[in-house]
Picture (cartoon, rainbow, N blue to C red):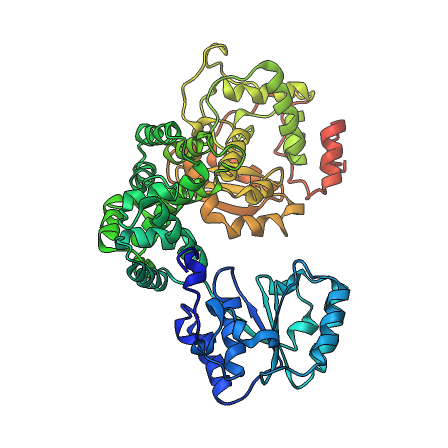
Amino acid sequence: MSGTVLYRKWRPLDFDEVVGQETVVRTLQNAVAQDKISHAYLFCGPRGTGKTTTARILARAINGRTASSGGALGDGGDLGFDLVEIDAASNRGIDDIRELRERANYQPGAARFKVYLIDEVHQLTSAAEDALLKTLEEPPPHVVFILATTDPESLKPTILSRCQRFDFRRVGVDDMVARLRAIAESEGIEIPDEALRLIAREATGSLRDGVNLLDQVWVMCGASVTLDAAQEALGLSPDARALELASAALQGKLADGLSVLAAVQQDAIDFARFKRQVVTHLRHVLLTLTGASDSLSLSGPELEQLREVGEGVDASAAVTALRAFSEADVSRDPYQPLPLELALASIVYGPPASAAPAPGPAPQARQQSQSRQQQARRPAREQSQQQRPSSPAQERPAARPQSPAASAEPQAAATNGAAPAPGPATGPASQPSQRPPASAPPDQILQSLRDALRQRGFGLVATMINGSCQIISQTEDTLTLGFFDNYQQMHMPKVQDEIGQVSAAASQVLGRPITVRCVPNDGASAASASAASAPAAPAAPSPQGPQSSPPADPPQSVIAREAASRFGARPYQAN
């Protein structure tokens, strides 16, 4: 027995030794005690959780056998030919299932039931499943089928409906540590609880893997095992370095985090495994910050370390760090730290603080392109006013000192064949003006608002204000967006639903608290808002003599505005 690996030597022999599956064990024990044996069972769950072992125990129990009545290593050998184990991964064809059906008709030799244990049953072919289904529908009274699988969703619903299903769950850390402690004491292995918890966490809920890892540590370290020796035997980096990187990410210490990654690379440690440890620490910190540390199976010193790392850190920062490291792809080269370095840098620096474009005059070609785009989006009434001489007060919603960036307006009018409005000169155009974004033209502010919304993750809202509205008024604390008639039914309600985010983005662009309002823009509202916010100015002389203000034009469709933009058409006015 000395040459037997631990996971086979310590395989449970009865229901009382099964770990972490209390509900399954209690139900099966009651079924055996009440003699309510089903003709077919389905055991499903992750690997290493006890499906095959429990199936062998059940086979002995329904036949009145116990662990003391024989059987090597708890494998059901005492049942002889009355327990038939089939590996569906290698016996998956229809011929194998036909042979099983023929053998099932024979009576058991010495036992009460003939038990067929089909492991990895999801590996059967479709034809083999159909052949097995016939036997499950009308089984002989002396046959019990136990199907085991890690992927029950791959089975046909007709098979699932004819089996009693039992779901095996992953074994908890505390339950696994207790089982490993019992095995270590029986084998004479001295190992601290911290090392056992490390093994249990590395096993990820598979008790078989946990016992295997304990065997591996025992072989390398001997009968006396320390935490550092267990980490070395399992090929794990020290937890201190993973926790140190997590702390550097949360505290925004880029240099310290890069030093940790350089040291890990120097030791040729697999970054895929190191990343998992960092993500685990960040998750634990997040749960600690949110008051959910009771769900963690950690010791007192480990919890104290997490509280020190998370001291003064907001939960949102932990979420950001956890997401960045989780999304870092180290699968291409597990010994290259670049993905983790980029993740750390993105945590520390984050997105740009402002989405507003840098002030300054654009090149001439870019100005002309922007002017053509702005002209195509303007309503027909504004274009008709540009084609007639007008005063500076009617050019824009609010009167502001002329700036080089605002000089794009006369250039846009000249490009489209409209006469520029006369106005006082404000200085040489080549001299850049260091002004706040609030003094930029309305179209530039609107473009900056869209960019800010996209950076905030609201790209759909940014699309909804692209070409569907214009800024019709602007005050110290309010920005009014006027939506054109064809966009008032769909675009304006969607923007109003996220008006808080739109106001926050506008405040970011303009550098002061701003409340954004959405109103219909029928063509006349923009002019009235402009006239209300602009100071009075003498009207420019008309070539045809003095004339009164033109009456408000009726709302025009998109086709009419497009025609006015392309061909310079003016609204029809009766003589």
